[in-house]
Image (cartoon, rainbow, N blue to C red; front, side):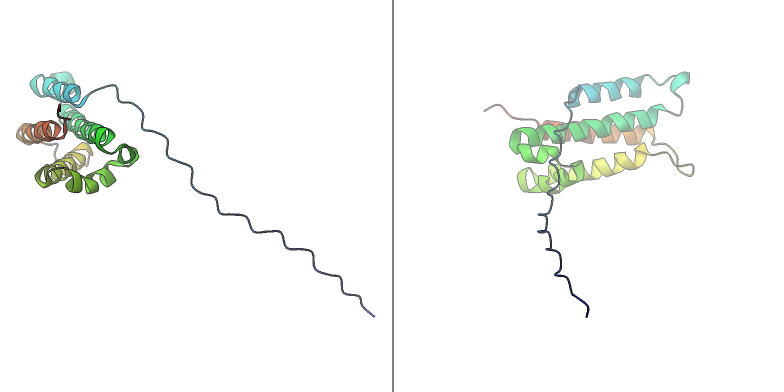
Length: 149
C-alpha cells in the first residue's frame, strides 16, 4: 500500500512590484537663452575647423534650448510633467499653453531632431533653415517664459 503525502503548503503570492520612481532630471547648467546665444555664435563664426560640423551643432543647441524651455515651463506650471520625456511634455502643452505655441514647439523640435542626425544620403541643414528654426525657437522660448505677476 502506497502512502500519499500531503502537499506542501503553497507560499503566498508576492505582491507585484511597482516600478521605481523616476529620478529628477539633472539640473541644466545653461538657460535656453544661453543655448540660443551659443547657436548664434556658431551661426556667425563658421570656420575651416568647423566645416561640416557647425550646422548639426547649431541644430543640437537649438533643440536643447527648446527642450530646456519646455522643461522650465513645466517646472513652474506643473512640476510632475518636468520629469517626463520631452515628447510626453509636448503632448500636454496644447492643453496648458497657446495651441499655436504648442504646434510651433512640436514642428520645430521635429525638424531639429531630423537635422541633428547624420545620414550619408542627406545634406546638413542650410544656413537659411537654421536661421528660420532659430527664429521659431526664440518665439517659443518667449512664449513659454514665466510671466511676472
